Amino acid sequence: MWLCHRVHNSGRRQAFVVVLALLALLVAAPAPSDAQSLFGEHYVDVQFATRDGKPMASAEVLVFAPGKPDRPVQVGRTDKDGKFRFEADEDGFWSAEAHTGTEIARVTIRVGHPDRQPGWLESPYVILGLLCALLALAVVFRYLRARERARARSRRG
Image (cartoon, rainbow, N blue to C red; front, top):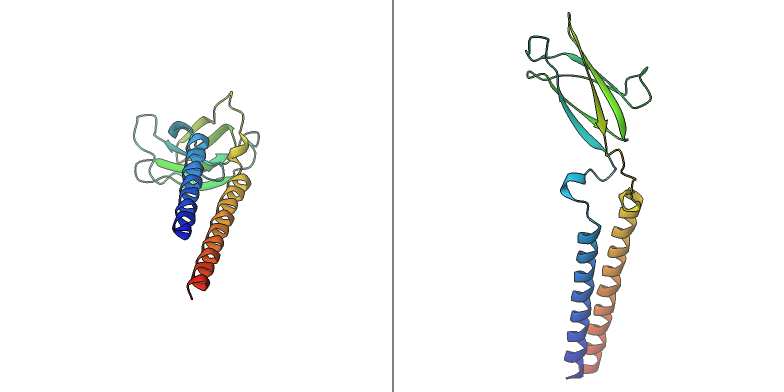
Protein backbone atom coordinates (compact mmCIF):
# COMPACT_ATOMS: atom_id res chain seq x y z
CA MET A 1 0.00 0.00 0.00
CA TRP A 2 2.77 2.44 0.94
CA LEU A 3 4.63 1.72 -2.31
CA CYS A 4 1.54 2.34 -4.46
CA HIS A 5 0.89 5.62 -2.64
CA ARG A 6 4.53 6.67 -3.09
CA VAL A 7 4.56 5.85 -6.84
CA HIS A 8 1.18 7.54 -7.28
CA ASN A 9 2.45 10.75 -5.64
CA SER A 10 5.62 10.59 -7.74
CA GLY A 11 3.48 10.40 -10.88
CA ARG A 12 1.47 13.39 -9.70
CA ARG A 13 4.66 15.35 -9.12
CA GLN A 14 5.93 14.51 -12.59
CA ALA A 15 2.62 15.49 -14.17
CA PHE A 16 2.64 18.75 -12.19
CA VAL A 17 6.16 19.59 -13.38
CA VAL A 18 5.24 18.85 -17.00
CA VAL A 19 2.11 21.03 -16.81
CA LEU A 20 4.12 23.81 -15.15
CA ALA A 21 6.78 23.65 -17.89
CA LEU A 22 4.14 23.76 -20.64
CA LEU A 23 2.45 26.76 -19.02
CA ALA A 24 5.81 28.55 -18.80
CA LEU A 25 6.43 27.91 -22.50
CA LEU A 26 2.96 29.20 -23.42
CA VAL A 27 3.42 32.39 -21.40
CA ALA A 28 6.92 33.00 -22.81
CA ALA A 29 6.02 32.16 -26.42
CA PRO A 30 5.81 35.14 -28.78
CA ALA A 31 2.60 36.00 -30.57
CA PRO A 32 2.43 34.54 -34.11
CA SER A 33 2.97 38.00 -35.57
CA ASP A 34 6.24 38.31 -33.61
CA ALA A 35 7.45 34.80 -34.41
CA GLN A 36 10.91 34.37 -35.82
CA SER A 37 13.54 31.72 -36.05
CA LEU A 38 15.51 30.47 -33.05
CA PHE A 39 18.49 32.69 -33.83
CA GLY A 40 16.53 35.92 -34.30
CA GLU A 41 16.53 36.00 -38.09
CA HIS A 42 13.72 37.43 -40.16
CA TYR A 43 12.99 36.16 -43.64
CA VAL A 44 12.17 38.85 -46.15
CA ASP A 45 10.43 38.15 -49.45
CA VAL A 46 10.63 40.77 -52.19
CA GLN A 47 9.39 40.83 -55.76
CA PHE A 48 11.11 42.93 -58.39
CA ALA A 49 9.39 44.20 -61.53
CA THR A 50 10.30 46.38 -64.48
CA ARG A 51 8.76 49.82 -65.05
CA ASP A 52 5.98 48.29 -67.11
CA GLY A 53 5.15 45.78 -64.33
CA LYS A 54 6.75 42.63 -65.77
CA PRO A 55 8.64 40.38 -63.33
CA MET A 56 12.43 40.71 -63.39
CA ALA A 57 13.16 37.01 -63.94
CA SER A 58 16.71 35.77 -63.24
CA ALA A 59 17.89 39.24 -62.21
CA GLU A 60 21.02 39.51 -60.07
CA VAL A 61 20.13 40.68 -56.54
CA LEU A 62 22.42 42.45 -54.06
CA VAL A 63 21.27 42.73 -50.43
CA PHE A 64 22.67 45.40 -48.09
CA ALA A 65 22.46 45.33 -44.28
CA PRO A 66 21.48 48.38 -42.20
CA GLY A 67 24.32 50.88 -42.01
CA LYS A 68 26.43 48.97 -44.57
CA PRO A 69 25.40 50.30 -47.99
CA ASP A 70 28.82 49.78 -49.57
CA ARG A 71 29.17 45.99 -49.28
CA PRO A 72 26.44 43.44 -50.10
CA VAL A 73 25.85 40.80 -47.44
CA GLN A 74 24.06 38.47 -49.83
CA VAL A 75 24.01 37.98 -53.58
CA GLY A 76 21.57 35.84 -55.56
CA ARG A 77 19.08 35.69 -58.42
CA THR A 78 15.34 36.18 -58.62
CA ASP A 79 13.08 33.32 -59.71
CA LYS A 80 10.92 33.33 -62.83
CA ASP A 81 8.37 35.57 -61.07
CA GLY A 82 10.97 38.13 -59.97
CA LYS A 83 10.81 36.94 -56.35
CA PHE A 84 13.77 36.74 -53.99
CA ARG A 85 14.08 35.75 -50.31
CA PHE A 86 16.83 36.77 -47.93
CA GLU A 87 17.56 36.49 -44.22
CA ALA A 88 17.81 39.65 -42.13
CA ASP A 89 19.65 38.95 -38.88
CA GLU A 90 19.25 42.42 -37.35
CA ASP A 91 16.54 45.06 -37.11
CA GLY A 92 16.77 48.16 -39.24
CA PHE A 93 16.45 49.31 -42.84
CA TRP A 94 17.62 46.67 -45.32
CA SER A 95 17.95 47.40 -49.02
CA ALA A 96 18.07 45.17 -52.06
CA GLU A 97 18.82 45.86 -55.71
CA ALA A 98 17.90 43.75 -58.71
CA HIS A 99 19.94 44.22 -61.91
CA THR A 100 19.06 43.08 -65.42
CA GLY A 101 20.79 44.13 -68.61
CA THR A 102 18.84 47.38 -68.91
CA GLU A 103 17.06 48.03 -65.62
CA ILE A 104 17.74 48.36 -61.91
CA ALA A 105 15.05 48.02 -59.24
CA ARG A 106 15.65 48.99 -55.61
CA VAL A 107 13.70 48.36 -52.45
CA THR A 108 14.20 49.42 -48.82
CA ILE A 109 12.52 47.38 -46.10
CA ARG A 110 12.23 48.00 -42.36
CA VAL A 111 12.87 44.77 -40.48
CA GLY A 112 11.57 44.55 -36.93
CA HIS A 113 9.27 46.82 -34.96
CA PRO A 114 10.65 50.35 -34.47
CA ASP A 115 9.72 50.53 -30.74
CA ARG A 116 10.44 46.92 -29.89
CA GLN A 117 13.30 46.13 -27.53
CA PRO A 118 14.61 42.56 -27.72
CA GLY A 119 13.65 40.45 -24.70
CA TRP A 120 15.96 38.18 -22.75
CA LEU A 121 14.00 35.12 -23.88
CA GLU A 122 14.95 35.74 -27.52
CA SER A 123 18.56 34.79 -26.91
CA PRO A 124 19.31 31.33 -28.31
CA TYR A 125 21.58 30.75 -25.31
CA VAL A 126 18.69 31.25 -22.89
CA ILE A 127 16.47 28.92 -24.88
CA LEU A 128 19.19 26.26 -25.10
CA GLY A 129 19.86 26.67 -21.37
CA LEU A 130 16.17 26.15 -20.58
CA LEU A 131 16.09 23.06 -22.78
CA CYS A 132 19.18 21.67 -21.01
CA ALA A 133 17.58 22.35 -17.63
CA LEU A 134 14.43 20.49 -18.71
CA LEU A 135 16.56 17.60 -19.94
CA ALA A 136 18.45 17.49 -16.64
CA LEU A 137 15.14 17.53 -14.76
CA ALA A 138 13.88 14.60 -16.85
CA VAL A 139 17.08 12.63 -16.18
CA VAL A 140 16.78 13.25 -12.42
CA PHE A 141 13.16 12.07 -12.42
CA ARG A 142 14.11 8.92 -14.36
CA TYR A 143 16.95 8.24 -11.93
CA LEU A 144 14.70 8.67 -8.89
CA ARG A 145 12.05 6.47 -10.45
CA ALA A 146 14.58 3.72 -11.23
CA ARG A 147 15.97 3.94 -7.69
CA GLU A 148 12.47 3.63 -6.21
CA ARG A 149 11.75 0.58 -8.38
CA ALA A 150 15.04 -1.01 -7.33
CA ARG A 151 14.15 -0.47 -3.65
CA ALA A 152 10.72 -1.99 -4.21
CA ARG A 153 12.26 -5.07 -5.89
CA SER A 154 14.77 -5.52 -3.07
CA ARG A 155 11.96 -5.39 -0.48
CA ARG A 156 9.95 -8.02 -2.36
CA GLY A 157 12.83 -10.36 -2.97
